[in-house]
Length: 449
Image 1 (cartoon, helix red, strand yellow):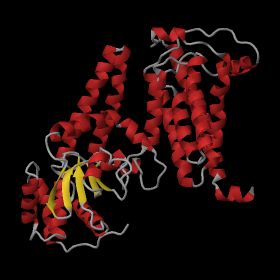
Image 2: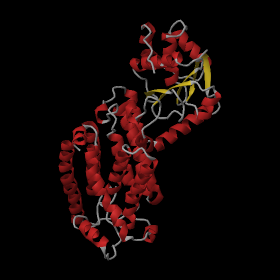
Image 3: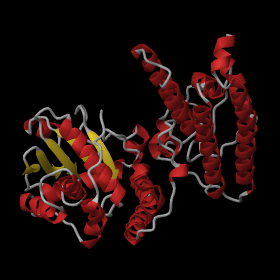
Image 4: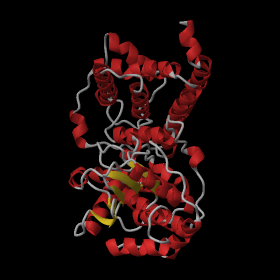
């Protein structure tokens, strides 16, 4: 026991619990009180919800979240992961309660009388809860955060299955105890996923500290376009109501894309070194990624997936798994921040760059070094350099590699070789300005896997 305590920051965990407990009850209670002062608090429910049964016994899984909440803080293995987890819980509480104050809603069905053992828990719940504080469901948001937290400690398949069932029971119980309407569930899940994305546990990703206002006018322009798109989707969701409310998901997605362009940069997509996103980023950006994938298909559907620029170097769009296999299983180098490399591709590497923007010289230099590293380890296989379309980011990376490591004779000749192989490339003056310092630089030392 002493060794277990020594390995974990339990005093810091206790301090966080002492802070988070009162914070929850204070902010949640304030939002409840605020709703009671309103002359009229609307409700948002679908007609089919009246068919949802009331199962009093589901108050037991509903209440278990309190135990898992408190216990979770004491399982942290380091101060870093503890702080990130606690910040997730705090962010969910503050954001949800802010929504409750700005847009109060109430549960429109009266709960039937409860007897027996469940009655005690229902009475305890009514002691601090009112039929307000609906969307987004803080209960659901916390369940998502706790599910992501506990799964890192479980390796056995059966244990993970138990966790998934528990999380499902927690989420379903908000309906069967008649605590929430359906709209509260997806909005609560979205909030939970947002908090997981905002405070990643990995030390290599630090979202709040990654913020740096863009100096590039193009990034601000694109960020503005995405912000307008987010506003239009949100307006359509609120105006249309009903099933149109699902448009709030792409609204959130586009709003976060706007933040990436304005401040977070490519790191906001949380793409790792092998071209795969964190699960939270995949869900948050799913509507945007779907649009990006469709756009890439429309632009490249009549073009070959890749072309050979020089022997051993291919350039093209992000391939499917089948296209990668047909090409001879090449070493993949992706420059995409928004689209994932196909799953199950070994030795893939990613240097994520924002679409439609010109990266700094150091980023292109990094891409060239990664391509060279892939080439040295390719063992005769080609290297496929790709982005969403294969028109700009990957083309610039190929030029950077040819200019530094190839036998092209310089950047101008490298661009000619790339343009000859893929005439559709789009490289304007700003790209050449970013590439220019690489023409005079000495080749770097390639990385080793």
